[in-house]
Length: 380
Image 1: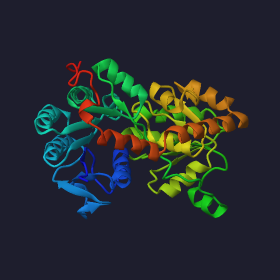
Image 2: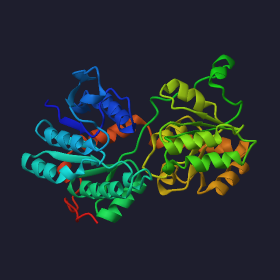
Image 3: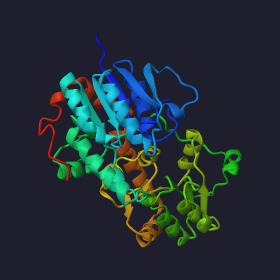
């Protein structure tokens, strides 16, 4: 049996040391590597040790940075090169979308397929200036128009894409069950982390669209409820100013980024509830992980978060609402919500279910996956 060849484009590379797409690609290669042949494009500048293979996947190194302004050319070169080596070019993200019209043309004449995971609405992130936001929105439109199949991990993002570009993405969500386990925290382990006896937990990058400032300000106004916030506080001037402003608030502990999954799970496992401030994106891994840990969820009120939690979490839109929500919580409400969140996670966010959907997507006749308007209208 001839194995279908899949190229993964748009990430820094494997093994994963960076963001959510790298972690996703890692799981994809490990789970489906026995059924199809993967080639993964990696940034030469990000890996001192250059492996030839990773769990059966071929690693191809490109001498460009995967982030910053070079990412456009990095993604574009990888995409075009992959067409001549693979049956399916699977692009994670839209930063190289200016090359997609040419990639689509080459795919069509060679019988290959261009599948693009659009992630969330990257152009809405507050960190981008006007020109960058315009470019990312333009790129999103190109990806919607020229991909054979558009993929997203959130129904609300799919609704947005269908309304804006008249092209319905395939919705395949995100898993988290294989990396999570409740971690006991005895007194010896608790002291080095310097945590409270009881606390809420938040985990995010220190970016404005994650409403870090809103969460910190709300808990400052609730001195009898503790908060442990894990983030990259030295990431920017804005995040450093936040750290300076709130570091001495008695009921708030600001912990730097934690990359050890067991340590992070130990912190999250013993929290009373999880606070999720993300407002841009689709199915956010940290939210799904919290649900798998059986944590009650207090989330920023946007369609993406309501979709993930099936409208069953507690929601807030500003400091005042978050204060009111937290003050109204009690043991019964937390216990009931924890059970709801875990039940949703078990039903929707297991890797076995997710990759069964990807296997079906890759192995079926993708040419007919989106019969309506193959190219779609011009981006608006």
